[in-house]
Length: 258
Length: 258
DNA sequence: ACATTGAGTTCTACTATGTGGAACTCAGAT
DNA sequence: ATCTGAGTTCCACATAGTAGAACTCAATGT
Image (cartoon, rainbow over all chains, first blue to last red; front, side):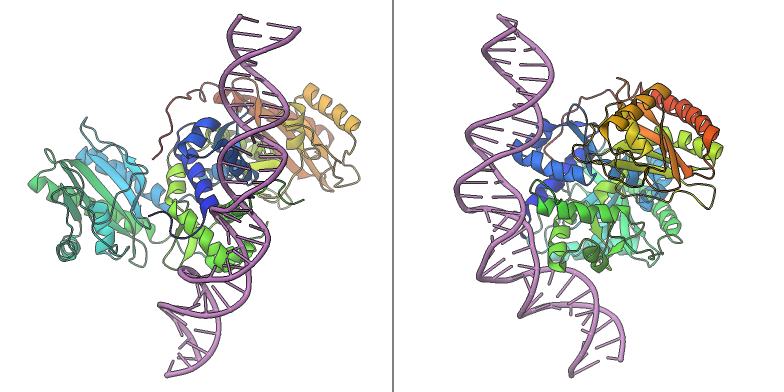
């Protein structure tokens, strides 16, 4: 199912930009064009536009890196308050559990990861930036579903393992459980051997805007340990929600035409 | 002179994205479309694409804010090393001079501002994010010209005041002076009553990649004070260049196709 | 010194793609 | 219940983007 609505050029530009942003160092032009599967002429043209707007910068060796507009944005403060506020809490969860901790927000069609604290163990969840994690079979996704941050996707519920929930009724029942408990669990539903627990972060209005998860292998995250992790998660996510409260109001200041 | 090379859609998308990044809070959709001078249908379509790629996010009230990809980029470290390293030095320059301090990189056609420390006085340079500051009549621009970070623009040299340098010969002479002194000066050349002093930041190879300026009104930045500011600038920019050195090497790690 | 290769930009003819007005939907006001 | 405003979807048209080929420039080899 390719993009339903027509915007090829912008999609391509976005792909290029995202690739540059996710690479951890300047991306050589050729590699970038290849990664985006674009003929070099097209890639060149699009990058010229992005450069004009300061979104990318070409080094003297003509490798591509994030541009001044992004540096400025990243540098000074207004970068998502969420991450700054959440960071210490994520770190603490990492300390306490030793497992992989993730912060995510609801994307249009899948869970969007924002930050990750890596597991202390050798066997742990790898970094999944850019992977497509569906709502119905991830702990983070279930949190978003349970608290109405996203709608249950139309169409068939993808089966990822033999334990994946694929019917609406069973999913609804599970989500009810999430709301009762205050945290969501996925137990071998996304990938065999993988267990995750997640709890919601709400803004001042009580709207769920993000979620935090703890993920590990089923050999470590067993029975009652899950309940304990759940309790920790609730404590930390509540703290984050509280921290989020007083901020996030002002909507003054008009946008200039430059 | 509209964009010479053809890329309307990407230009429009960039404008939208930049606007969102520069606003200090979520931008209401209508305002955004207006700022970019786009019919709402077009704006909507483009934003849908940007959202698909996680570059923007639409709040429940459908105001637009930077998306998870940007939050992630901003949040975790790889945001321009330059700014992080320079920040304390800029702050110190602000302390010592009391004047407006700017960090900038060479853009394709003009000086690209990255960060600013505001003047302690009431009369000082305002924030000029997004303004078009030409190379030949700004201190920062002259630094880039003098050290070959950009070429002297073809075509007529724009006259901004009666003291603006508009001939190649006089500009070359001035740039020679910049190289001799180690810092550049603009005295009433960009705007009446405005004086700026700037010095270069070089990377490990000695290539000039950025510059720092101190800007103030001619009533305060007089004669010998300029020399003193120049000396301060050189000291701090040297320190930044040195700090920049050991980093910025690794160009391993391939870019995945996601 | 001259040919060779490779990386990136510019050119150009073709048509696929993006455009924007109008119609539509939805939510909140009156 | 009707209106108003905000945003999304639709659709016929032509503008704007596409990709191959030609071109430029630099680096490398003989």
